[in-house]
Length: 462
Image 1 (cartoon, rainbow, N blue to C red):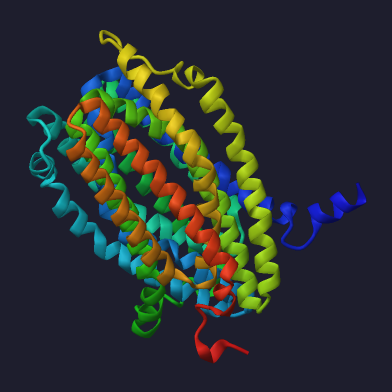
Image 2 (cartoon, rainbow, N blue to C red; image 1 turned 180 degrees about the vertical axis):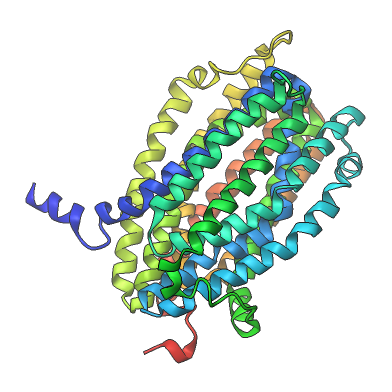
């Protein structure tokens, strides 16, 4: 028992990891709840709205993934500056993210206008494309806020002050759920808006989160980090930020494109399979986003320890994070296989035959059960190496694995003309893709090259 207590409370042990991770897990659960309710309400509204939500949502995410990935990487800079006791540099790096987010706003709005034409070009039906275009445009109004949210929240995440992030995210999620119900179905003077209302609810909530984060970031007590004085666009710092952040963003983009291709391919084969896939991805958010939050905690601790020049503690933090992520994931894997029907209790579509969608959802959950453990492995280890600055390997590994995933998937679609076979083949390929990434990042971590890396300027190294 003494040994267990020592292990639990050691530096970079489970207690320290969970102190950072639990608020991030709570934050990701709030985001999961927001997305889950979004699709749940649309499943109550209509099958067509549900089928349109996933492709449009995934394409919207893909559109924002590059700058989002860059903005998120600000937390690694913050962590390493914080660990190296270079507090005055922290505010300036956050402001570079803010400038990038502001510039992106008109770009996303311009792209959002052409959403319907985009989905028609992808081969979707006229009515499905119209609904996808409506949702895509509604989300475009909040895309810039997504970048700003990621950039400003990095100020708190990188320093390990994740309770602040948790509270703000819960406020945003709660508001989004409330607005979802009001704007999708209408109430009193508020008209029924359907899928447009779902997207607008998300965008409004995102902007309110940005306003809260911005207010907190600019408080005078944080000026020790240069949160007010570091507002200038610093081209030298921006170039360094982008040199590490762009590979991180490209990795996000490639993963987003791969998932987008997968979702679009499924929707083109069968709208029923697309609706089932939307439900499966909603259910799997209960695992993915909390584990993603655990991975963010790992990146924070690794970054801080690399900033201090202590790679051994960074390694300890990574392994302890892995055990936590695996224990959490295993519980859901058992549930996916043993009691999959429990996850479908809340889903029903009045006036439609839900039996086929339910059968497909249970079948797809078996694939998720297979790849979830590998997904936990790849999330932890990719965050660990990127927390040190190894973003270039991450983008190369993701590019190669994603290319294989898509090529094998396309070949299978040609070989298997039956719709059911094509859908299952794509799910098999998705499972293989995630498993491959898990193995690759584990090997990269074990090689140890990340221990010699840092995002700090050479002049700051001691």
